[in-house]
Image 1 (spheres, rainbow, N blue to C red):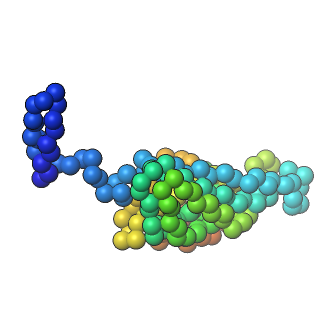
Image 2 (image 1 turned 60 degrees about the vertical axis):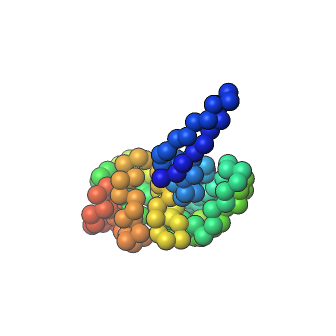
Image 3 (image 1 turned 90 degrees about the vertical axis):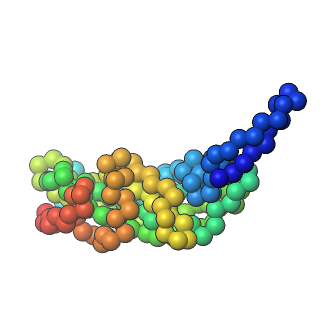
Length: 184
């Protein structure tokens, strides 16, 4: 318990209570750090038919610390790139999974560019493949506690801490159960 002494208009007031102003920096991370994810869109018509598409996805992730006094060191980020199957809209293909570490100085930024992932799809007559659906970012501190969870689709947030166990190239439902899909 912290004691505070406040002098107001010549009167002395003493207050006791939890010190909510001196929160640990980890508790403020999601309030003080903004994350911006931009997709480099490269969709081409490729394949056997005129309407077959191939997506090449590269994500640029930028963390910005708006706090003027607190730096965040030894952060570990996990980036997951998802695609939705054309034939089964409840199945999602984990296109890419990347982990990186970073430190974010006060009023500083950090930028990360993902490796390129590809997916091919067609949603007309000869339906096949999986189309880009979105991303999930989980940021942890050096001890592994989650500092931030962000996603393009809020449905991924309740299971975000379990995504580290998944394998890229496999298909899952929103409850992270493996779903077997054929290539075509």
